[in-house]
Amino acid sequence: MPGGDGTGPLGKGPIGGRGMGRGMGMGRRGMRGAGPSGFCICPSCGEKVAHQAGTPCSSMVCPKCGTRMVRG
Image (cartoon, rainbow, N blue to C red; front, side, top):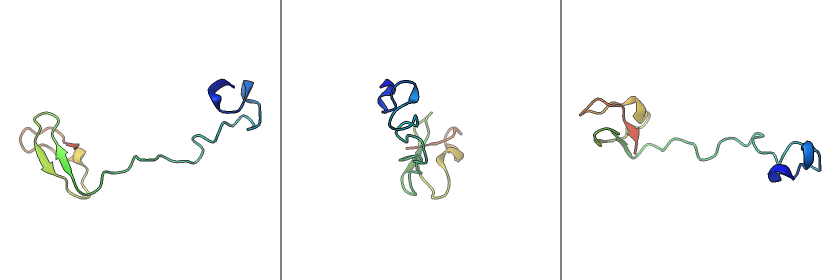
């Protein structure tokens, strides 16, 4: 069974060549926002600022050096 998905050679077999349903309406899991609490951190100088709810860290700039912040 190539790929181990139960389809057999050339996509034929008990599943009808559709695989095991991977990527078929399952959505993305675990890729959500980090929530309202926490910190935004500057990747250049390490400055730490409290995260503001509703504002992505990537839209904030470091108060010390002006670099865009990342979620910490």
